[in-house]
Image 1 (cartoon, helix red, strand yellow):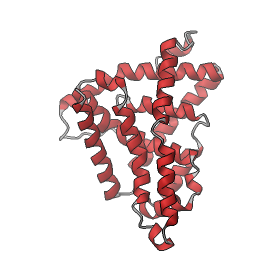
Image 2: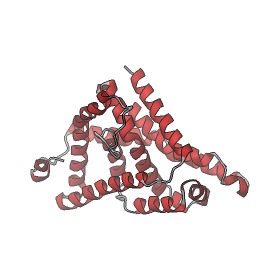
Image 3: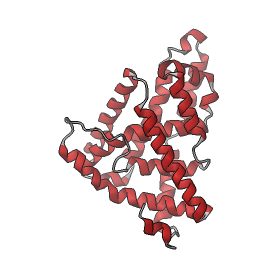
Image 4: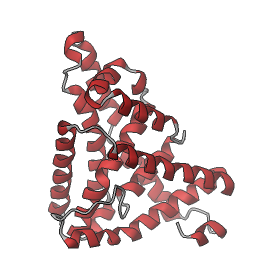
Length: 251
């Protein structure tokens, strides 16, 4: 965030920014993610205990964290303003971290860390240490759920929200097109900052914004250390490909 933004008095949300904020929350809430996950949990609970650990519904729940992000990208009017290469960069560099962030937030909101139907199978599939880190990260999230939903859009349209690695299979045009996202990212970050100042004042806004950035960095680091899981990796690759295709079709 530009330092000048933190030091001046231009912290009043404009009509456009209030509209943008409202649209973010509406777009997220209309996904009905909680209802879909609850349906899967009810089905898991109805199975005999021995079958619950092998139920595909556990993977379906995790997949829904990412499907929600996929829908946010597809329904955002800002994605239409991007070049095909920039859209490809968006999905390849930001999708996994944003989906994980959404999952950790949703688990907190639905208290899934204390739900055996979700927690026990995930412990087997992803490892107890990884799941404990998810729970610890969740406990550090800001209690304002609306703020978390807005940050998801910042992450989706970030110039890069992942570990930076060189991929010799990735076209140079895709890598360089990440810079096209900066203008959108700056608009979103400015809106979030003004919202924080509006609710909490300058000093508290600085602390909360810093914690949000720390949350994102912690999750990126956590994903880097995540145990190898071929089913999970295949799911992410498939969703990235589907999202890229959907965005290109919109042209």
